[in-house]
Length: 306
Length: 306
Image (cartoon, rainbow over all chains, first blue to last red; front, side, top):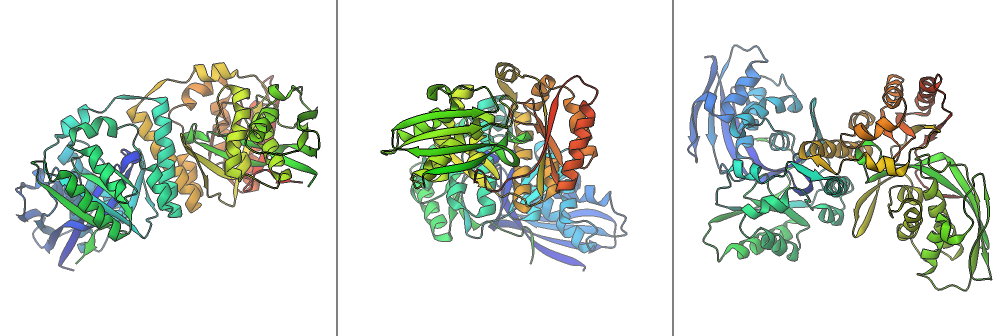
C-alpha cells in the first residue's frame, strides 16, 4: 500500500464518573487524513485544511506521534501527511487525539502493521503531550480502539476495551467559547474526601457494569460525577440547564466532554439522541454564543480506512 | 412452611480497590440458622451455639434485622430463631452480616416471600448498624444476592450483582488478633489526593471489567488498593508477606477482608487456592498467633436453604 485515506473520529474523555480513566469514540464527527509512503525518509505535513495549525513536524501532534513511532521501527520509507480538520481545536472532543491517533494508525498500515492498535497508543500519546503538556490516553485510546476504553493504569500502560451497547448514542453541544486548559486544571481540587471517592467508585462501577450488561437505565443512574463536574461546570455557560433539558428529553445522563467546553449526553437510540440535540440547542438559543450540535452512535471500531 | 434451616455464608467486603463498594460471597464457611414460625407474635432467639452473643432481640443483629422487616409487613405470626455460629465475630468476614441477612432471608421465606432479595437488604443493614454503628451493605448484599455485589449508591440504595467468574476461588487467613473497629477507622485518611482517586478508579474499573469478561489476569492486575490498604495493613501482622507468598504461589492478588484482620487472596481454580492457603499458613507458622485458613469457591447464590 502506497497511500491511505482515513476517517479519524472525535472522542469524549472522562465520561462523567470516569474522570481520567474512561473515554468513548464518536462516529459522525471526525477529521480525514491522507498519508502517502515516500522514498524520501522523514515525515512531512504537506497540507492542513480547515484549521490554522503548524506544518512543522515538531510542532504538530500528528508529526510528533509519527516521529515517536518511527523511532521504534526500521524503515527505508518516509511519509507525507494531509490533514482535513473538521474537529475544532479546544472543543473538548479530542481534536489533537484524532490527528495523533490517525497519523500513527495510517503509518502503521502503510508499514504492514508492525504494531498492534494497543501498541500504537503510546506513540499517539506523544501527540497529546505536545498539545496539552501531559501524555494522556483518554482520547487517543478510544480513537484507536473504538467503543469505550478504560485506562486501568499508566504505569505500566494498561488499557481495556469495554463492551459497547448497540443502541448507545451520544449528543454533544460545543459552545464556541474558549476554556483555557490552565483554567480547567486550576479549578480541580488537589484533594477529595474519602466519601466523595467512594461515591465516584460506586458510579464508575455501575457505569462499567451497565455497559457490559447493556442496562441503559443503570448507565443513566451511574452518569454522576461527584468530584470534577461541580467545580469545572462553572466554566461552561448553561451547563446545568443543558443536562436538565437533555434528561427531560429522554437522555440517560451526561456531563462535561473532556475538560470542556463541550457537553455530552448519552441516549438509547438515535431518535432520542436527535431530540436531545434540539433540546440542548434550545437552551442556548438566547445566548450570544455560537454552538455546534453533534449526534453520533458510539463508534465501536475507531479510526476507519476510507 | 413452618420451619426453615439455612446456611448463611461468610463474605468479603471491600475486595481491595473496591473499598466501601464491593463485596463477595463465600461458600464453605458460614453459620447455620433454624427459624420457626410460631402463633405467638414477636421474635425470640432461643439458642445461640458456638459464640457468646446476646439473646435479647434488641441487642442481637438477627433480632433487629427481623424487627425492621416485621415493621413493613402485617403478619399474625411470630418467629423463633436458633443460630449456630461458625464465623467468629471480629474476623472481618461478615459474621454479623451472616446472622442479619440469614434471619431476614428465613423469615421472608416463612412468610411466602413478600420481599425480593434486593428488598431484604435494608432490613439486614439494620443489623449491621447495631454491630458497627453504620448501616453498611458491603457484607449483607453479597450474603443475600451471592457472587460479587457493587453498591452503586446508598441514597437511593442501588445494589448491582456483578458477573461471577466460574473458576474464582478465595483463600482467607484469619489471624486471631483483635483489630478494634475504632482503630481500623482511625487509620483511614479523611482526604485522598485526586491522583490516588484516579488510580483507584482505574483499578476498580479493571476489576469489574475482568469479572464480566472472566479475564483472570485482568482481575489480578486490578487487585490493587491505592487508598486504604497502605494505612490499614499496618494493623495486620505479616500482611505484606502473606500477600507476597499468595501471589508467588499463583494467587491473582488479594487484600484486607473487610476492615481486617482477615487477609484474602483470589485464585483461578481450587488447587491453586488450596496451595495459597498452605503458603499463607507457612508465613504465620513462626508467629505466636492462632489462625484459621478458609478456602472457598465464590458462592454464586448466597444464603442456601438446607
